[in-house]
Image (cartoon, rainbow, N blue to C red; front, side, top):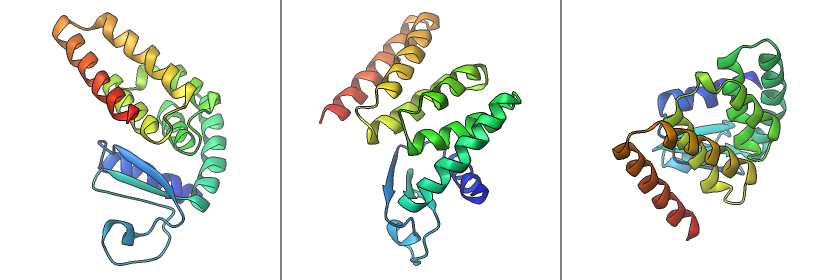
Length: 165
């Protein structure tokens, strides 16, 4: 359980630009064109992430407990990493979004926008993901200079057009 969470966190450290993910029957290297059929639980390559369905169940249960424990102990990094795993398994988990809100001072707003984009590409109807994104984007637009505002709005429009297809 902990190994799967570590593997997921390593995937995001190695490639913070992961832009798509999917729950698949088996997360094996064969998905990305290399040899191997062993289910690793999760695997990332080419800015894509695959989580096996069986792995997602285990990951959710372990990460949710780790998130609760870390949140109670004010361990921001562990809480944020665990909440990310929970949200990949269940994008509408209010507890995970509240955890991310509690430790928002430890988050990079640009990275958090990328993460919410990642979630929305797979969970287009996730009300909690949209709500969090709206709150974050609103805050960023209030504090940004005009040029930065235009960039953010332009990127948001591109995402909306992509999701509308």
